[in-house]
Structure formats: structure tokens, C-alpha cells
Image (cartoon, rainbow, N blue to C red; front, side):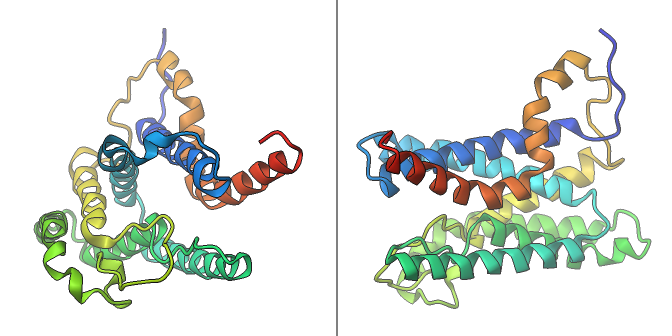
Length: 256
């Protein structure tokens, strides 16, 4: 079957969409068990889910986002918009938690990590944006930051008593009388975003698919995930409110 030609990196859209689908599915089963308090999906408390499966899809999402960051020439604008959206999410979650007397505060999650990552890359990449192509110093800095962030996670327990609101983004939250939802600190997760930027700078130097001869059947098979990947921000922001309204609607109707 003849391949469909496209400069768009379909594999990145598909991988990001798959990771997003799994994140939405996770939030669905989380809401069923912990929000509606149904005795289902207890495997969320098993070690393999907490320390293997969930981190796997988060890593895929962050790495692909890092790769995609190297395609853009407007990362500062994108990063600022995303930061504003992340802060709005924090404010909205605090308001909802206060009004409902619940603990669904989102102080720092994947949107915050992505915003910091995109803005950091824009800062590190500013010489190349001015015409200096493939500045090796950028690669060195990205590699050092990646190693520091990922390795630093193993040292966080040494400073856990120093937790504060100021250090919460780094992975050292203060003692709190309430729970945080979707907490994802900079250490080590920003490191995986930078892994993606390093891959993008080498594998995707021409800013096009690494599989230009992909057959049509593969493009068709991955189309649903590719669609989700192309609209990942909208889906991520809206999926949880939609799930909550839907689930409470089903409960009101006596279905759940």
C-alpha cells in the first residue's frame, strides 16, 4: 500500500495521544474510586501502578512534549500562555476545593512542569533563535540539567524536613492538612522533558517525521491517538470537569 507523504511527525502526535488517553483513563478510574467512593479499581494502590505504569505514560507525554518543543520558534509565547493556564487551573482547583470542602488542590502538575520546561528551553535556545545553528553549549547545558534533575530525585528524602511552599515545585512540599491532586514536581519530571529536547535536537533536526515512508495503514490505525495528540492541551484541561459532571450525572440518575 502506498505511503502517505507528510512532513508532520505523526508518531509524536500518536504517542502523545496514547499517553494522554491513558492519563484520562487513570483520572476516570481515580474518580470512580476516590471521588464517588465506589469499591472498584483497587489496583491503583498497588506498587506496579504507582511506580511503574503511571510514571511510564507521564514520561512518554513529557518526552514527546520536549521533542515537540524543538519544532517551535515561539516557545516563549507558548510557555507564557501555558503558565497562565496552569496558574488559572491552580486558582480554579482552590476555589472548587473551598466551595465543596474537598481536597482537590492542584498546586503543581504536568501543566506547570511543561510551562517551566518550555520557558527554560526558550531561554537556553535564545542564541539559536538569533541564527546560531546547533549551538553545542545548549546541548551541554541540557544534558547537565537532565542529569541533575533526574539524579536529584534520589536525594530529595535527605531534605524532606526542609519542605515549604517555596520548595513545593521542586518536590519538597510543606506539611499540609489537606491533600494535593495530580502533584508533579520539577524534580525529576522536568528532566524527562529535557530528555525529549535532546532527542528532538538530534533525531528531529529537520523538524519532520522520523518515518517519512510510513504506510497508509499505520497512519490510519494511529489516527485516533494522533487526533488526541494534536489537541492534547484542550483535552487535558477539559477532560476532568467533563468526567466529574458525567459521573455525578450518572450517580444522580441512579446508574452509579
